[in-house]
Every structure is written in structure tokens, then in C-alpha cells.
Length: 281
Image 1 (cartoon, rainbow, N blue to C red):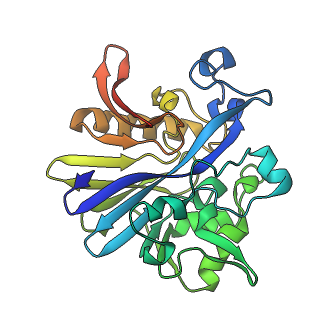
Image 2: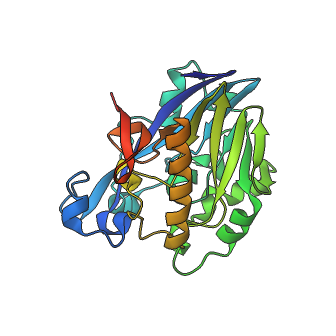
């Protein structure tokens, strides 16, 4: 897809699974399991979908998936599956390698979004994209360094501390334009200072939802993850962004839905409704 001066592609960084109850919070299982059937361990399938954005002298990745550092017990718990594709494999489809990435925008530092930012080497974890600058919100970085007991399990220091050690980390302070035509919006319900990019040109807007709307089922306003630190803030943030998306006909990219890659929404009799979906080939 071309948006202004950028080519934008959703790319696959593998599959994994998370507890269905945690993904839907207070929503009863008989409702959420219709669209997201769980396995015998109550886990639902999850995509690790990233964005590849090229143009204006940049080759940008938005999020990096779980990466390849998982093994043993954790790989089993989260049902890690790289057979659908890794970032390196996906980049090769466009004639690129990890060395071609100039910028990595991390929406936040939970392992399923930042795990691929580093790779294990004989010298320990090192940045996976050797020529890239990595962008994280300063307030989120502070939260990742000092997580609460509630979200500590979502942060793996090997995913992000090497970025600071290697001098490739750039901390950002709030909303604004990161590159021409690429703007960041801030959200604080799921975690502190989640940043989601919008790519805009000539009235066309693409919005990368990250964990604000992780699955198509979460388009329903009260369907909020149990992982969210501040669910009532998430509710209002979703209401605001989905209202805008419906009014201005934004295309929304869903990071975690294994079947639906993107959607557009509209206002209907019962609030926000699905207008169109783009399903995985």
C-alpha cells in the first residue's frame, strides 16, 4: 500500500498464544470464544504483526514481535511458532535484510512487541538491526525499568537494555511528528505511554493499533484486556480513536489478530461497527 511518500506493508513475525481470559478481561468466555476459540490450555491464537514502512530515506519497522530468544518452558507457555515467518524472512521478500532497517519504532516494550529488537549472540543480547535507531517514549522507558508487580512479567530486560548500552536508543517526549507524514499518538490505558503511529497523506490515514485494539473482537468498546493497567482509561481512549477512525475513514492495522489484518469502521445504530475487514491471505 502506498500512502504519500511511503510504501507500507504488514509483515509477519510469527504466531504465539495468550490466555483467552486475560485477553478479554471481564467478558464471559461464551462470548469471546466464538471468534477466538481457545485450545485445551485456554490459550487463543495471536499474530505478531509488524509494519514495514519505506520511503523518504527511511526503512522503518514498527514493533518487532517476540523475536527468537524464547526457548524451553517460556516457548511452551506462550506457544511460540516462527514457522509462519520471521522478520528476517519477511524482509527478504522485499529484498531487504536487518542491516537495511534505519529506524525501529517500538509502541511499547512488552515482550511480544519488543522481543525482536535484540538477538542472542556469543556476547549476549545485541540489537537485531545494527544500523537502526530505536524510538521509545521516555515515560514508558521509565515504567519498563521500574514495572509494577502487575505488569513485571511483560517486560524482559534483554529485549531493551542492550539498546541503551549500544547507544541506539532515542527517548521521545509525547505526541508529534516523528518523520514527515508519520505522527505519534499517546495512550495510557494499556500501559504508560503507549505510542501508536498514524501515516497520513491526502486525506488517507493508516493507524497502527498496537494493544489499544489488539484483536478485531476488541472493536467492541467494553471488550478490554485483563492486561491493561487502567481499563477505564482504555475505554475512553478506544472511544475517541474509533470515533475519529469512523468519521475520517481511517484504515486500522490490528497487530495481534491471526485472521484479520486490518479494518475500517463506521458509526451504526449500536455505536462503532465493522465496515470492512482485510483478512490474512
